[in-house]
Amino acid sequence: MNASDLVLTPKGVRFQGLLWPCTIGKGGIKSNKREGDGATPRGVHGIVGMLYRADRIARPVPWARSIGPLDLWSDDEGDANYNLMVRAPYAPSHEKLRRADPLYDLVILTDWNWPHAKRGHGSAIFIHQYRRPGYPTEGCIAFSRAHLHAIARQITLSTRLIVL
Image (tube, rainbow, N blue to C red; front, side, top):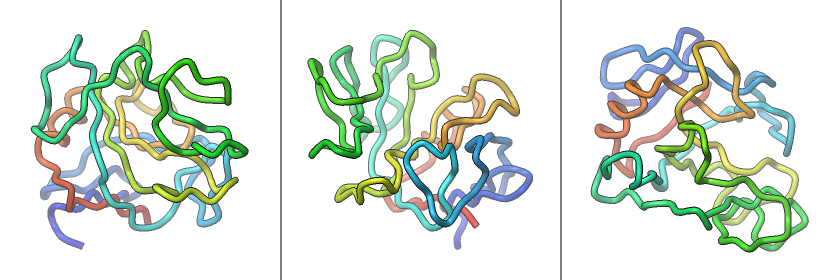
């Protein structure tokens, strides 16, 4: 572990010498993550990308990709595009990346079960904005808007999310 890693602890995420309050999945932390269990998967997860809403915020880092109204994330474990970004129209089960609320205005992508997803092991684990302090996610790591934006400006594609 080093200062550029995001390390989840019982009191928040340790990053760049600071402790950042966060929320995790409603299913707690699990080593055997499954689709729909609401758990945050234990392990070392690479950062593989960043998505943002250009109509709401400025590009946080040069390598961030803008998302639009047709951008979706497949969470249908029976589909060939399971755990991949897809475009509408898209019939299989999916999650809209461009939401009415601000939770996905900025999304940091991890390599959990990606790019070659094992069916049933759970779709994307994102790092995103939380609804409010203490409100759990479906397995993702979530921060306040201010903290998420500060972290996003400091991470690189060599940063790791470490969930102990």
